[in-house]
Length: 178
Ligand code: THU
Image 1 (spheres, rainbow, N blue to C red):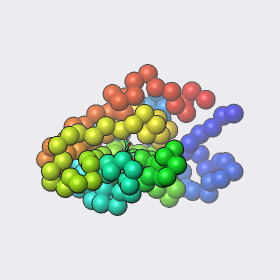
Image 2 (spheres, helix red, strand yellow):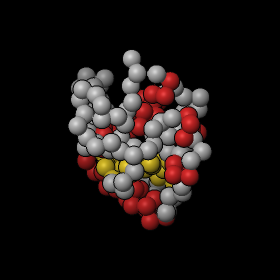
Image 3 (tube, protein in one colour):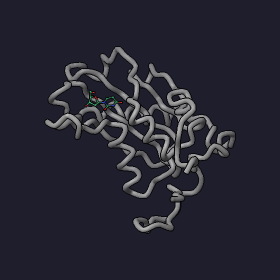
Image 4 (tube, rainbow, N blue to C red):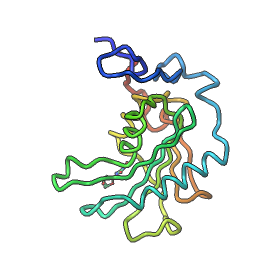
């Protein structure tokens, strides 16, 4: 069955179409998706991800994660990891943030910042760059252009790495194949 994740023409969407950013192989070289992020945008996303980590519910792993996703219209949605006694029902911070955006009609994602550390580590003392799990990389792939989407792996607003989704998920499968 043909699907279009940006289309309003389906059974479950009355949302206005979000222009552009189909996760299409054909869009990989466009200026729109390859534009660089302004430093103040990077700082805002990292700050939001660090702050979102405060709400992490992680009684099993004690590993607290925060994420902030930037959508094409400039909106920012945040999220934290939310664990569950069944373990398998746990959701990562990235997916919490992305699903918050999509559930408000934002299907075109530009960048995501991630911050993570054990619960006893204050934001100012985070020592390691985080890394998104495979499921979250695949969820990003649904709503972002792989070569344009920036993933900001943050220790702090001053210390971070930026990779593209294509770096993190090479040779990926996505909606453009169906
Ligand atoms: N976690 C995230 O929130 N994002 C990731 O990409 C890696 C893992 C969470 C899930 C779980 O609550 C905890 O970190 C330990 O895996």
